[in-house]
Length: 256
Image (cartoon, rainbow, N blue to C red; front, top):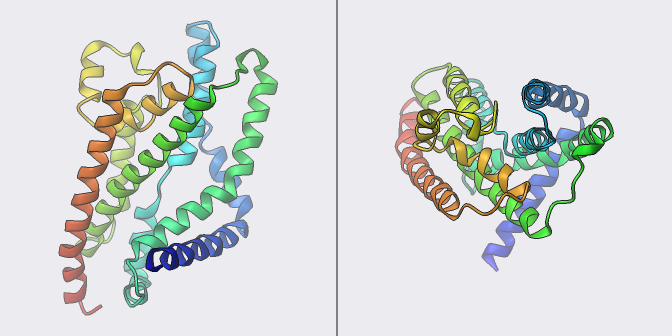
């Protein structure tokens, strides 16, 4: 009963933030336009290597990136600087759930825009149209959920540095630049030299884009990759919870 009650409260929270995000639909649309870089890269790669595989791959990159994007570090930084975090700490549950609710509400609000861009894509590139295997689609959605948790935990953990310094969002900018190169965002990892692929697989980044996109395209199931993704998610979840307990003491000591 307690779990059901907590879930119901969380769904209400998601509904609140969904309605809130609907007030900024124009802003969300323009933010999504800033995320069409995969289609620009697609145009470059198609000229270098013919075939619809690259078109489908970068469509998958776009969809995946929109579904797993995380911006909690910016929100948390602002919450610490303007004092909004203090009333959140007085609530009966962890502030993390407010930020998760924000992200889910934003995702629901921009879903129609994602579908519209996909329809435009297939109108312009009808030869790239395909019907994914329902099993792979289901597995893809599960992987997207896990990737979102991993990205959220990484960025949320970095957010706690706001208790020590005022401009932590710049740190995420550096990490995002590395992520774009090693995740398969710029190009499928198979076009990279072997040493670059070996380097990428030492990080959690290839499992955030390259892995789920390949599943969506029906290129098989990489069980090792899925296990590594789960391992990274578990590691950062544990780090996040431990660092939160340590960091909140610092915030309390500041007089919050």
